Amino acid sequence: MSIYLTCRQRDWTGEEQRLFARFLQGYRIALENPDVERVSPDFAKRTQATFTSDRTDFLGWCDSLMEPLTVGDQGKFDTGFRKYTTVMLDEYPELSENFFETKNFGRLKLGYGSALDRKFLVRIEGPTASPDDDIILEAKEVRDLSGVDCVHATQGDAFRILIGQSRIANLHHRFLGYFPRSGGIFGGEAFWVQSWADNYTELNITKSLESVEDLREIVYDVGLQLGRGHTVEIADPFDSQLRRAQLTFLSEYEEMIKATVEEMTAMTVAGWEAFRQQAARRRQ
Image (cartoon, rainbow, N blue to C red; front, top):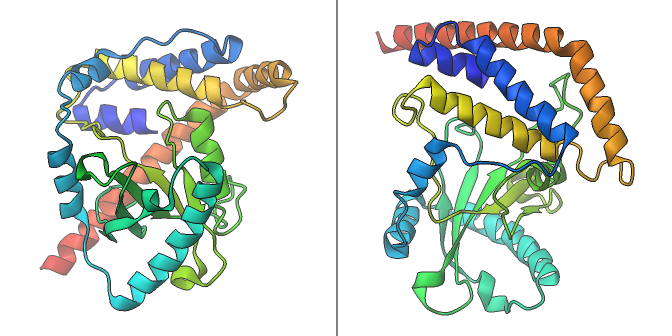
C-alpha cells in the first residue's frame, strides 16, 4: 500500500504495479535463496554519506524531544522500566546495574504512524560515566490489534513485536525488550523497548527520493529483507519446506493480494479526505 500512496504523492502515475512487481520479485528471490547478497540502495548510500559522529548534538536533540511527565506518570514509568532492566541485566550479565541508570526521560511526540500511541524516550548511563556514550531507548505502547480480523494477536502482545523485529529488521537493536502488562503500568498496557541508532533517518517521500528509480531500488531491498526474515525459525528444521509453501501461496494468491492492496489504498485515501474535510469544518 505504501508503494501506491508514494506514487500518488509524487505523481508517478502508472508506476505502481511495476514497483509492486519489483517488491514481489525481491521477496521471491529471498525465499528461494535466503543467503542472497543485498546491495544497499543508492538512497541509503547517499544518506549514510551525510552521517556524522557528533554524539553531543544527537544526545542533545534527543533530550529536546523528552516532554516532562506528571509525578504520577513518573512513578508508573519507573515501575515498568525496572522490570525491563531486570530482564536486560539477566540477558547481559556482563553489564553493571549502573548501565541502565536513568539520566533523563519524558514523553515522545515524534512519529506519524504511531502518532496516537504513547511513547517515552529514555537516556541511560551506558558503559561509562561519560555522557558521550549514553544510550537512548524508546518505549512504545503496544497497540491493541484484537479488533483487526487479519491479524492474530492478543491485547498487549508485546512479544510478537520483538519476534518481528528479530526476523525482518536489518538493524539489530541490542536492548530489545518490553514492559509487561502486569502491575497496572499505565492502566495495564504493555510497552516494547528498542535502542535508537545515532544516525536514525526517516525517508521523506517528497524530499528524499530523487527519482522513481530510487523507489524501485528501495522496494526491491524491502522485498529481499522480508523474504529472508519472514520464515526464519518458524518451522526449523523444515524452513526450506515452509519457504517453498510460501512461494506456492504467493503464486496462487498474487492477483488477490494486488487487488486487496489497491482496495486498501483507496480506502486509506478516502479516509484521509474525510478526515481533512472534518478538520477543515472544525476550524471554521
